[in-house]
Image 1 (cartoon, one colour):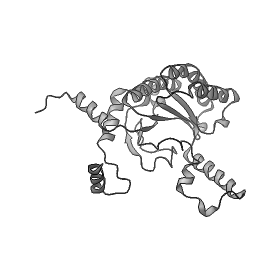
Image 2: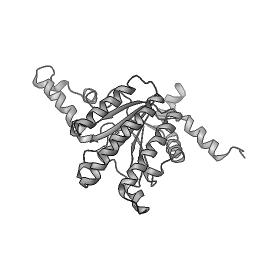
Image 3: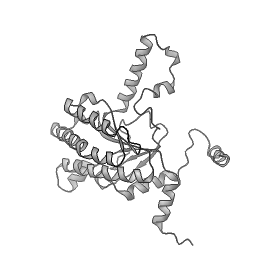
Image 4: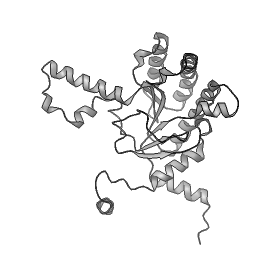
Length: 258
């Protein structure tokens, strides 16, 4: 019988195979607040604290890229007051958190149609990215006013313009070329997708990039996301065999020959 403590066993499992890129849908802020008889916005503020915790833990675990879905292109449909408060929170978070990120060598990157935001917010986004541009640690990607269909559409439009200009033949377009025009084209594709809050869908998030991603869903609401939940997700990933269309035997033989 092993004398190893369960926590030590879990940590050794996590270290065995850490995903390079983790993508997260941060769901459950509003429900977290409602269950506490608080306004929904209180849940969004608590969610910022969870982001801080998750960034710190992912960095310590050796994850290279962390992509967070902060505001989707569909979130504009929410009540006007809630959207306005979310924009204000985004402004404040960029101002406060970017200094902490920079101090911890984290590089911040915002993806999505930022032209849909106010000019003031756009300037804050550019300033925050510029401040951390030379950092060499964890890459923190925040998807804001982002949608997977928008991402694929804007990539297709770029290629169509090249065809229209005579720079590219339509029959030369392949999956690799398409991927090169998408957001995150210069980063490894997500290995692990996590969604909090109990919903089991990807909600128009990184549709192309998640093609071979491992999925992990949890009922934990985002403000309650902590180190233990993260390690459970990483441990689950570590136990999976990623085949990418091959058989399990092929993967095992490849590992043995490595």
